[in-house]
Length: 221
Image (cartoon, rainbow, N blue to C red; front, top):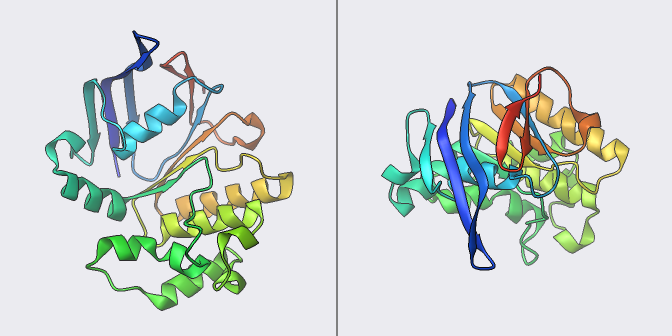
């Protein structure tokens, strides 16, 4: 999926005053790229990811995803598009505590309503991510690394065109962080565009990256 932002800005109100979380962002991401977004906490990284995902709309500027604009879609159309085309891995643990690992992975099928659960694919995805043995477990029974793998499985289960990961290695030990990044590399090699937000520069590879600073974006390589 090609992604383009044209002069995208997002304002918020804080203590009675407007401020820009991101300001005049121009960005192009081509299908199949693996792109890193770095920056300190509060620099605007998460806001930018949420705008790309359509979880937030820019207060000015445009966002295009394969030529589509979130603002041109109804809420239902946007939800269907997001569920089918974008796999989002949030920074915070977001598994539903009352559902098993299997049920959490299958949530995109549930939201789709038109797509039956592909049991074989769920099995293969879970096996690949080394969580097949936890199908009947609940999130509270898993370690941090195991929860992150379930979140990745849920994000990729419908083979979306783009995977967006917000601090995917946060709070993971070195071994788990390395394994998560290897999984994302493999997903990228299979054709999905991958966008990773991180402040951990030791996980960065290649030459494709941007730095967020005070809401502005700068290519760093």
